[in-house]
Image 1 (cartoon, rainbow, N blue to C red):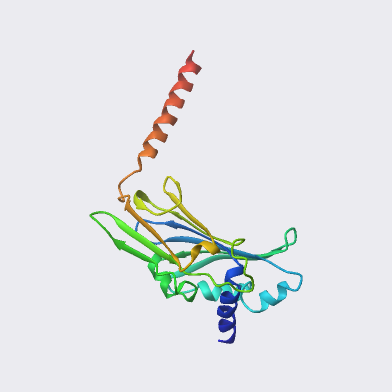
Image 2: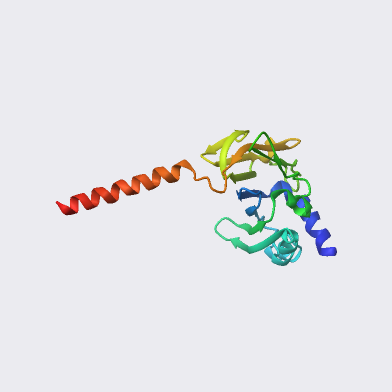
Length: 218
């Protein structure tokens, strides 16, 4: 209980000093996999043993924060990078449904939602809560990044960066203000529906094979 309290306390205190990266790959039913990475620069007074002992970079504490009946933790990595004096944590886990993550303390303010929209469409939202200033007033040097890969046709979104079905939101902590909301409407592929690019790829490969065989006969 004490360690859990200290973990939450440290997360609040150092929230403004952490770079944060979250990557999610969806399945059409709302389940999927998530990778979370966060890191911070250590000052001359900081020690890695302090953070390892009290949770924020402690594997056991991290596992407890991301474990539930809705999730399965697949890997946890914690390491120090001496080249730039930074401390890192990487967590990979799967989830049964994205909105079930609201039950985790770690995401208690994220307000995940995966709901039905217009006919055949899904609406996904996530709230990015305001960041604590923490132990530094320099909130322009730290960033939060959210990357989502959707299994379907993107209808509407508010992402600043788009690459096909991959959408990304990236902010300096000073830009978050009272919070930001990720919002995406998409039409999931049907179970028996094959994306058009698969057909193009198969056709391209077929042309190459036929061309190769034709040249070989000559």
